[in-house]
Length: 305
Image 1 (cartoon, rainbow, N blue to C red):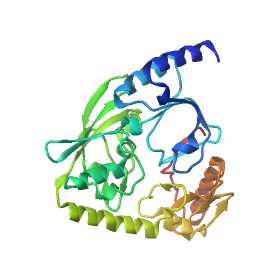
Image 2 (tube, rainbow, N blue to C red):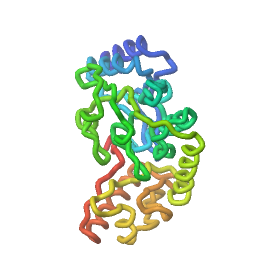
Image 3 (cartoon, rainbow, N blue to C red):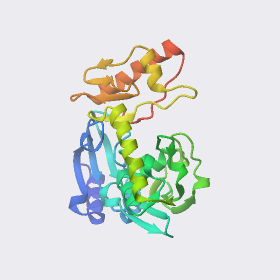
Image 4 (spheres, helix red, strand yellow):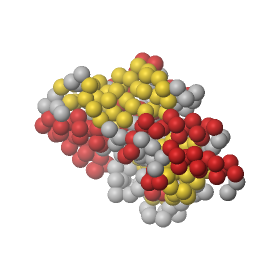
């Protein structure tokens, strides 16, 4: 280990406990695709510790990758150099503000947030109950499903800027659009989201969540590791229909496969590598372009390629 790495490690150990730092941690354990090589350093700070960890990485010029629940990632088989900072369980928490607003830390799961809202008779999170992501990641990509999006319920965020400042931004400054936000462009880290919900009946809210859960089970290949919808919806089309029309239902590269249940999903049948998944995605893009002239853009974030 070179001197800089040694010094960095010593400083990191002052900021975080031993349980919050893992070396050469397989990222396959932290992505819903269940693939990916090792992170040189894998850290799990609480929200209050995030600015100091980020500042330390900048000081030592350590590559830094921030992830949430890993539900929208494809990580290279070679892994990632530097620090992978997970906003996960250690960075989670929910509190009620003003009766109908929730302040939710970035590492909190969407499913946990939706369940908390339902229990407190707050409506608006139903669409997100089955999305396997964290609130921070969902805000950054303006995640959505079944006609709802994060921008429908988001009133503001607390972010850490690339200059190391913590800023509160109202929703109207976030440039939220289909699978896009200002934070994505400016590499800002969401620390907390403020959600504006409405009073409702817990029974009605839970009934809607159950209805959407049944739809997911019927239509999506939830029995296999995947990253959800693999490609963004092209304007005027549906990615799954374009893939099916190109004759690619069930198409495989090794253990990576276009789902037979829903062509919009690429699944890991068990032993797929990240390289196989990426090759499959590229071949799907080529075939769809040849067949329909439409360019499919990945919704999945590629890391380490």
